[in-house]
Image 1 (tube, rainbow, N blue to C red):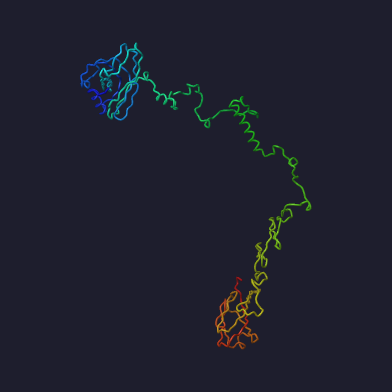
Image 2 (tube, rainbow, N blue to C red):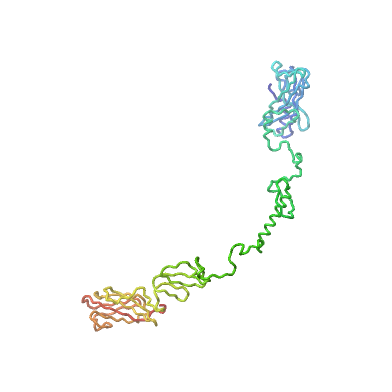
Length: 419
């Protein structure tokens, strides 16, 4: 059966597309007239021989079309007929009803509806109608006539969002708070005495009251610092608070300084022991002189002159070695700096660097040559002279080169004040 919009249906649709009205599909009519002339159905405003009206049970809008369904039963049909005409009715916002669309079928190919006395007959029928892009379209549905399909029943079974709108009052839970167990705020009273909880007997309020009593007593006990268990040294097997031991009784461990010991169990061989008030005795080992500058920080190092040493890391040479230069230096008490060495004046000019700086250039130089005797320069060394002196070196020169000539020298002068 081919369904067409009627002229009045088209007019209603144009008004809906213009936003002037709302289309509400109201009913479906079944008829059996065969008196229609070809092409005349679009001008129809009603069926020629309507037999049964059926309410819509469902509709769906998709794109520019609306799909309408209706559930038909022959309960009120006394004589059978062929459905040759089918009318879809709709009303506007003013409640005026129109034949929106019509479908015609020849009697020889039309569906037959038997009378109720013949047999019970039920089926679903409907049609797809054009509505354009109008958003002002709806339908009146009769839910009591709707038969559930297998697909609809499956959707309903799998719907876990409470489709029946059951409330907690409906199931006798009207007094139960709608809270997660972590958000519940149970009310209870602390028990008067410490008692164990009893499974299957204590209600929640009694159980929580006993737990609160137990926790309160535990907190009180933990805060009690007056020996609530009455623990004594005898019960623990500990020594008395005040007791004494002889030296022979102490056979293991390290005795602290406070008890007359060293506070240390082992010392290095040939080390020097240093006491430090109440701290354990320390062992110190090193190379050189062991002295302290008075700040309680003893150390191994070269002994300074002010503490009776020479201030030299290595000893001076007095053995007539063939090495040349400055052999040694020493600051004597009172600030006198003495430095000595040996030189070979085979060349015309020889420079010697001191081991320590003098305070100024007013130091004295004394030479002794292989020729014997102690001279400043002359007469044993008439051709020698000192053209340059500084606080950290001197230069000796010869006017004539007559071969190698060795001389030992000694310099005397003031040391800088910070030595």
